[in-house]
Length: 317
Image 1: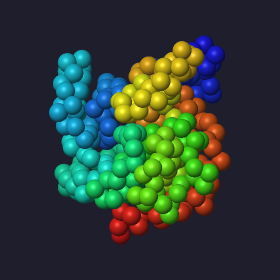
Image 2: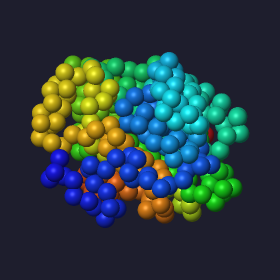
Image 3: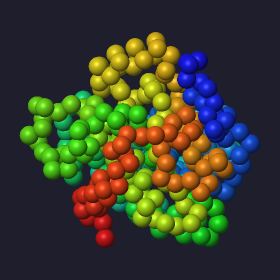
Image 4: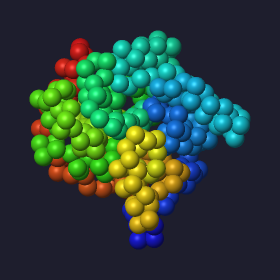
């Protein structure tokens, strides 16, 4: 990894770990939701945030796996403040239930980390008839963010602490369709035979960046930020269904550009806690430094169209 380990303006690099980029930061009093926290980057993100004193709500599809992670973290950090709540991002009903229950408890929310993701092996529709990658990776997070937004704004005003939304995207966003997002046919069953899972995944990862950018343009709230990131090439459960991707990752690991889970969670934790991010919004980060995404990711018209499309699909008021 030597060629890629040069430190950037932030003082961190591809070899920096989540613990290193949050060293000396006291997150006591902060409340964080981490989606997809039961494995991989989500687990390490949760561990490091509670290590720094934050209270973390693990929003997970598999509650048993989440409870196992919680117990493992408590063995290492006995005073960790951590809870596990069920959330299936592919189901709008599940997202609405999670948000309603969370808000009804009167809990504050300082940081929302939209981390969960899937890469399905073939064309599938969610129970809401949305292409499964798009439903889980983007639309579920879009709905969740909107339903928790007033809570985050209230928390920020009351605490005078900047609220942060962190979208975990991917370098893969560059390999989407020529038009970026195929709004007209994204949920069309006729795509079954021509469906390319890695392109559909890229489409959803592009949506993550566009979502953060459009949030920034619409919020215009002082003390509030929304950023996106590429965590790095990491062997995680998201690849479990795709043999071709597994083979590609093996090759990449030989070419020294893969990261450990601890390094992969670094940029997420950096955006969540590091004071260098204060006042920064609508940016795309790689290795804890601002990077340049694809031209499509910076397309304001595409971002607005995605927002309107997502707003319509989720029936938000």
